[in-house]
Each structure stands twice: as C-alpha cells, then as structure tokens.
Length: 360
Image (cartoon, rainbow, N blue to C red):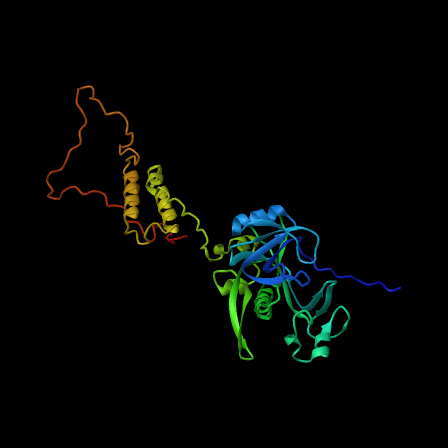
C-alpha cells in the first residue's frame, strides 16, 4: 500500500477571528438569521480575556455569543474601530477560494477551475454557465478570502483570522499581499493597516453599496515595503524606518595646551602639534591660535622656562663675594647703538619640522 505525504501549512495558533458582519434573529423562526453589515470591526474568540482586552482597546462591549449553527458559546465585541493596525506574519498568510457552505459544512471549495473537494471541474460553471456568480446566495460558491494577522496589543502569541466574502476586497487584498511577499520572500513580518471602506457599483442600472476591507502595508513609504525583509522591531514600530540613525557623540577635544605644558623638550611639544594636526584641530601652515600657543610653549622650554609655572629653571645659588668682598658682575658694552635682540621666535611648520609630513 502506497504512502501519502501530508504537507501541512505552518502557522501560529488561531486566537480569534476578525469579522465585518453579524446576524440577527429572523422574525420568522423557520428562516435563517438575517445577516447585517457592520461599519466597524467585530472580534470574536473562545477566550473571554482576549475580548475584554479588545473592548478596552477598540471600544464596544464584550458579550457572550453563539455563532449561527453552533452550540458552543464564544465571546464577541462589536468594536468602535473602523481601522485597525496589525502585523502580517512571515510565510503566506492569505488563503482565497470560492466556497459554498451549507448546514453540513463546506460543500464546495473551488479555485475557479477545479473544485477541490470532489476533484472535478468547477461545478458552478458547469451548472450555471459564465454568469454563475449572479445566482441567488446559498446556491453557488462565493469568494472567500482569509488572512491571518497578529494583533500586537492583545495577549499571547498567535494569529487572528480576518475573513471576507467581497470580490473587490479579495482582488485588492491579493494584489497587496503578493507585492509584499515578492519583496520579502515571505521571510519577515510586515505592519498592516486595515480599514472598512464603503464602495458602490452599478449593475444592470441599479446602484449597489457594499463595504470592502482594505489591507495595506503600514509603512512611512512604499520603498520600505518593497526594500526587503523587515525586523520584528520595525514591524512593531514602523516609525523607526524613517528615524535617522543615532550618531555617536563626538569625542571630547584633547587639551593640547595642558599636554604641551607637561612636556620637557620642544620636540615633545612638536609631537603634541602633530597629534592635533592629525585630528584636524590645527592648520597645516601653523597660522591658527593653537599652533602659535604651542610654538610659544616650545620656545619657553628652549629658554629654560617651566611652561607649567612660568618660572626660570634652577641655575644654582647666586654667587657670593670673593675673599676681597668683590662680587662678579657682568659688564655691558655701551659703545654700540644697537639694542639687545631677543632670540628668534620658534617658526615651525613645514609641517612642524623636523621631518614634516603634516597629518601623519
């Protein structure tokens, strides 16, 4: 006996459902409940906690509710939200088919070519021809789109299933999701914005009004949706996509003058100048104030002046008188007319000598 490989679609646990309509009892108890369209989103779940939290977030009143045709009570809130934010999980979260449901469950599930339950060609097309979609509701398949999304502000990790039977919503939803999957290869989440949009169309001279659920990527610009996979952090807060990167704080500027005053030779002061030059803090030609100050410090060191205190270095004790009580004195020749000249000031760059090289 041959074996059959069953391929299962990976997805998170279904925590609840997002709906756009509800039903009210029919005055005639023998007839089906009356379907009502909702201008706001409706959330339902088996968990009372989820629905109570949803009522707090989106408005509305949490209530116990039993789906039509079921005997198992659930919880529901008809919210006040016409728009919701969600996250599209990785993978392919969209499922679309033409389906016919009866009291016994799903009777037909078709892709428009093949009816998958019976594995036969489209039954609605075979029975009613090209205009099969104009047949009364409940007798033929209707478009059914299901998309799994994550609601980040509700408890627990899982998905909420949004279901719509609108042909127009199916078309718009498929186009948007296909573009996102093409960009991300289904490997990353995508933030979504969902809203209920009222539309109208004319058919056979009659105007028909109907709601359409719009599902589009919620990002600062289209470029972000098409640029490739996003991180989960970006999906949770899309505004970070347009937020400029945080620049590192500039390094504190060294106190070159303090470093120079701690030097003992003018060569060491020149090395301080080279450090400042490599950092772009002095002019290569030495014309800036910092360069001039460094040159003055080097000059003082060459004169024997302590650059930290301004005092002349230790030159020994003052000479005393000789045996005859005579002090040695320095004689000055006053015959010349020229005034005494100071030693030339330090004239560095090229670029701060001795080997030059500027920013090395």
